[in-house]
Each structure stands twice: as structure tokens, then as C-alpha cells.
Length: 510
Image (tube, rainbow, N blue to C red; front, side, top):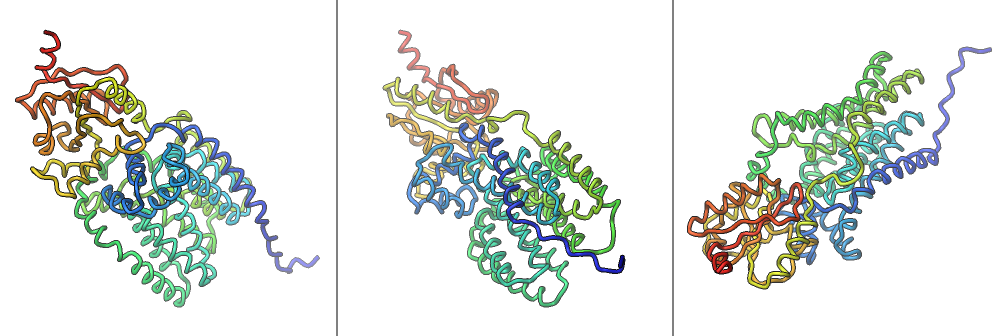
């Protein structure tokens, strides 16, 4: 027997096997996500509903008011022209994106590791993860961002191996598309480019990277004026994003914990530099580098980016990092043992407590109750809403007249009751309230309201929050007195109150 013969090349993997694995895990993901698809929209999703509820010409400026890019909303607008506004129809694009992400993760893990069990493990970690389930059932852009992030990393790795023109073209297109889905993905894309530059093994690849970066820069520059405006208002979201956030540290601690067993086994079998090691550096870098930079910019006050939604691209690559590390372990028993422990950790730390509602804001129930109140009360009634949107502080500016831009901000403040959950036509006006010092009467309310009208006050928040908003409102109008009642139908995180003018109450008693 000739022992000096070279080892035969591994047999090519069947794309059919990879596709079937991806489809199977994607169907598991679908089953886990369906129970949340028709729950009440929460306020961020209601922004989506408001953006797409009228003409396509309204989409860009309405998206911009929420500091968002337009691409996702244009896609949803086109879809809802066919289906109408429903909870399921607004969320279905995200559901499709979430399922594609899970399926792609599974397929790529199989191609990279040539191991069915590792592929299933990576896919299951993505399928059961609470963040993945949440974003796949939310009428927001993040399900799309996840798909693009997976494809960006896949293309980056193929470019580092083969330097094909078609891969470069697709990477440029997807990078620009990712930016116009959500501006925060620029951090992920810049980090990916930096890693590609560091890992490129030829000057030609670096030149191609420079050309691709130039194309992306041209595509991104178009949005720079809008992005600069958002940056100037960065203190808005800095109110709830901190470098010491317990929620964020818990998120990353639990999400990254599943990597520990595979890191240990990969270290045990560590060898020299190889293609698999390079891939592990690429995926590891794109997971950890954006998180570290976001923490640093948040800690220094430059930009509050240490927030799960802004880093969802990096979180999405964690299962691919697990696959990359597993491919470094040649012993099948150790490799499978490591990923099994990883799955157990993920099941223990990253699965929701139950399947079903995940948002906690039942605007649908409250809006229905308010509608019944307005329909049964024939007298003119004003509706005030404290929607908890940070941008609504602009309503506190002193204005006796409403220029067009202030009218738009009024509409923005009222968006929870002006799209899918709209109130019936009634006599009376609607007024938005500010985010800071919520409840204080705005200049527009002081100027246009009538003191003898009953008020329905809708508040995003708990009972205690709603009570405080009422107190702020009463304190801001010392010349008016009201009797406050709390209707029977309330929800945990959306409340409403009825305020009757005191003189009207006295007249009714007489």
C-alpha cells in the first residue's frame, strides 16, 4: 500500500442537501413566529403604518421624521397597496426576511463546515433566538437588515477567496441597499471593509476594495444632508442609550455565551493559519468590532450607537461565527459536542418565555374603547395623545400660527391614532403632546382649545405614567379644572383617561 499518495479532495457538497436543511429550519422558525404575527402594533410599528397609509409621495418625509431611511417603507407601501393595512400584512415582509435569514444561516453553515449537525445547530440558534423572533414579527426594517448582513459577509468571504467581479458588484449593491434600509448599518459595512482590507492577500484585491468603497461612497453621499440632520439631533436618542445599559450588556452577554463551548474546542485544536482560520477572523471581527466601536462612541458621547437595533447586523452573524469556529475542530466528536452545548446554552438564555404577544403595547384595544366613547358622546370632545415619541418635543416651541412643518409634527405626534387604528370622525380636535414633560399643554393646545370641552387623554405608558401625565396637564392649566375618570378598559402599557370640565360636571349634577 502506497502511503505517500495525496489525500483525495473532499467530495463536493450537494446543494440539494444544503437547501433542504435551510428550508427545514426556516419552517421551524415560521412556526415559532406565527403566534406573534397578529398582535397589536406597538408605537414604532405604528410609525410604519402611518408612513405607508397614504400616497407614495408622503413616504420619504414621513420616514425622515422618524429618523429613518425610505427604502424599507417604499417596499412595504407597495406591498400594502395589494393587501391593505393589517397587522399581518405590515409584518409579513419582516417575517419573510427573518425566515430567509435563518435559512441562509443554515445553508452557509453547512457549506462552510460540511457537517449537517453543525448546520442544524447554527440554524436552530437563529430560529429560537428571542431577538430574531421579535424582529421577524415586527413591522420594521430589521428583518431585511439581517438578510443583507448575512449576504454581505458571505460575499466578503467569497471575494477574499476568489476575487470575482460579480461578487464585488453584488457586495456594492447590497452595501448601498443596507445603508438605505437603515443608516446605522454604515458602521457594520465600514468594519467589514476594514476586515477585508486586513485579510486581503494580494494588492489587486486591495485595489478592487478601494474601487468598491468609492462606488459605495458615491451612493451614500446622496443621503449625507439627511444624515447630518439626524446627527445634530443625536441627543434625542441618547436619552435612552447608554454605555452602561443593563439591557444591552445582558443582550450581548447572553447572545455571545453560546460561542464559549466552540471557542474552547477550537482553541484546543488550534493549528497554523488556514482558510478556515481566516474565515473565523472575518466573522469574529464583524461580530465584535462594531459592538466595540458602538460602545466607545456611546461612552464618549460622540454618537449613541450601543443599542441592539443599531447592531442587529453584528448579532445576526453570531451563528456564522459559531460555524467558522466549529470548522476549526477536526475531531467530529469534539465538534458536535461543542455545538450541542452551544445549542443548550442558547435554549436556556435566548428563548422567549412563551410564544405569543411580545410587545406589551395594546393600542388596538385602547383605540377601540376610545372610539366607542366618542361615538356614544355626541358633544364635541378633544383628544390628546402622549405617544412617547422623542421627536415630539418640537411641539413645545411657542407658535401662535402653524406653519406647514409644525402641522406635520402634529400629525407625527398623533400617528398611533391616525392610520391602522384610527378614531371615528367626531366633533373636536386632536392634539399631540411632547415627550419631555409629557402632559403639559402645548402652545397649539393653549391657543386653539376650548375650556368647556371634555378631553380624552391617551398615554403610552403604565398606569403610574398616565396618572403623572394627567397631573402635568392639570398643573399646566391652573385656570381650568377637570374631573378625571379612568374608564374600565385599560391595558398594561397604553392607558387613557376622560377629563370633564368641572363647571360642566356641576351643571349636570344640578
